[in-house]
Length: 338
Length: 83
Image 1 (cartoon, each protein chain N blue to C red):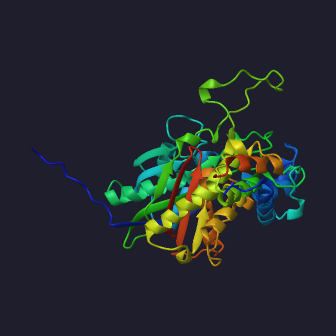
Image 2: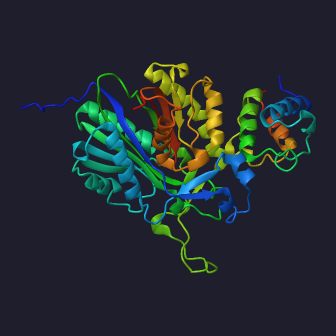
């Protein structure tokens, strides 16, 4: 009987380049306070957010992704037609099907495999894990991973608990072969018993009757909603344990890190993680939420680009990435910064 | 050995002081966490996690919502502490 021939890819992988796209509209806390009964001080204290970026109608998930991907490809020295796969992490591409990844791949000039990942705020780290494994398995030589969101489309601006949190944006990385290890083992998982902790207000096919008092009679939503205290506890404490496991899996300690880039969910969660992890003071920590807000799958690559650009993290340095969010799902890995 | 209400209150007051920066003398049974002590909902989670460790009790998310006063928290811990 004939034996199936197998393929082997690269022994090691790394992130070859990163790029981001920051939407043009700056939404201040003062503006948010025209929608909800709150104050700049209240929002800063609860979340650390000073401004968030919201996309204009022209700044679609596609356009933001193509822009971020172009920068990542240029930084990596890889052309679009070299991409064997495009993985897009998003919850705000408003088509159940087809995938946004197909449009992005087409715009970049590749017919490589293309698909979207629904893993909430962990989506980018899920994508990095998959891309690295694909390159090692020989399924693709170069893989683009995009995290992109327009959470402004899913934000109830009258919900005092969430109106100030969310933002828009895109970030992308190119992953490819490497002479030395550049992406550590992923530590990931799901906790479906907390399915309702972060969710949308109703399913797409279960839109309620329009509220009669609504000005235009239109259905409002669906919007993102979350159980703040439950998510805060899970993210601040359990994700610290996951972070430790990712460090152990990579065979390094917190002192070896040259950047800690957690998902930018809330500054208070980041503060807690740093404390529970016992992160040494010399390790720079991503805090882009102050400026960008929480843009889910896009926060980590956008923060990575920013830290490399402003020099707070060194090219070639070791960084711990951790994403966590709706599902609930999480993923963490140590990477070498491009 | 189970702690008394007074002992729990004293230890809880230490936690609230350390986590939320509230003077422990302010932490009385009739004080509400949010209204009187200005402990916001996220800081409350930090207090709860510290209390779980200190008193070896489980305080699930559903129960946290019902702990509006210091007395509520002390009663909960008193009732659920490991014998």
